[in-house]
Length: 269
Image (cartoon, rainbow, N blue to C red; front, side, top):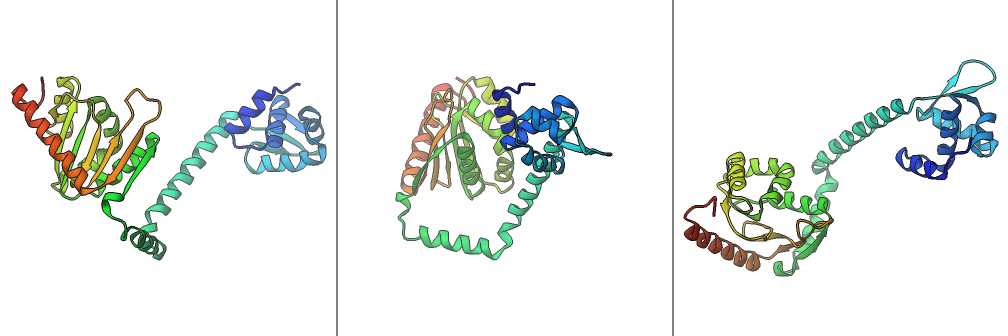
């Protein structure tokens, strides 16, 4: 049996195997039950290495040793392996989350905070700005910005963008309401969708005819999305500048007032 190089490459990536493990496993699958010699002949892997590879695959659950002599190996169904890998991945992720959650209680975390504060303290606040590339990084900074807000959060974005990000920041919005943090929201898009979001998240969102997308916390920090919604990769710019963000807050609030005066209400044209 000739194993296609393209298949070997893909299976190696999907199942996190090395090249020898991949070839040996595929060869074993093609036979169902086989000895190390038979596997070596099919896979092209040196026989001296095949024994070690089969033992490794057995430990990882890709193969089972058949009772009897000579020693042979039985291939495990791919579906069983996938389910096992899913279970292990979830378990590893949960353990990692628990580990990260308890990190704040350690002395190492205290030292990390001290290092950060030492590095930031000499810097003027208006000099702190950074670019964010990729949706996950943008969402992470947005979540951090909302979680650390104490008095006021100002959101200006499109209906579609808010709906998309609300799935990620819903818990942050709940916290803002519970802590009585003032929340001002201006959305562009279909007026009916603006009303729907207002009711769903208890936001009293206002309609604003603008494609701008930015988030401001306590008139000190701001996150601007600088790519169109149609972009394949989202990018943002984060500022920690009270002067700049306070100015932007004033501009947006003025725009909302003008829109309300022109439209006669806050949720439609």
